[in-house]
Length: 110
Length: 123
Image (cartoon, rainbow over all chains, first blue to last red; front, side, top):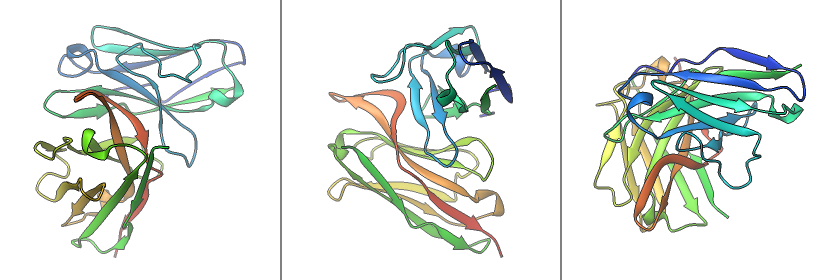
């Protein structure tokens, strides 16, 4: 399984929106509705932000949203806040217990 | 409170072996599929291994297949990763990860992560 492709970095000012893309293939992102997104602050463990493409776990602010079209999933952060500065990883189920993560995107709040 | 605590990491020479352990608490361990995910220093997340709740099904990424073995002891609430023939590229923080499950069904995403244990493969 090759890693899903994410932009290396995105940035935005407080209050703005940023979108992170996650491109895979029909064997992973395009083939399943099981795309999840994880936030990781430096030196910390990843935290689940979005699952099943667009669902938010309890406690995750509604300014985080997810979507998918074809082989590409996206995470949008609306109303960017300082604490959103972190690395973000997408992850897709790829069948037969296999999962594949994205290459990771660093979000910078200007 | 759900807790996943990894242990067993350390410095090992290339070609050596190491066994990682993950102690789980705060939930009914035997009801959950469990996974190992690793992260090389300064790099992204890499999926390593999975084991179903009853231990009947396993998966290992191609990068570790034949060298790593995942196992669990539901009576002790423990998850393990036996690593052998270690290579420089296995150097990483290894996370123990719980899959979201409920009522016998699992939902193909990861809801709790441990803090990780560092494995360094170097001569």
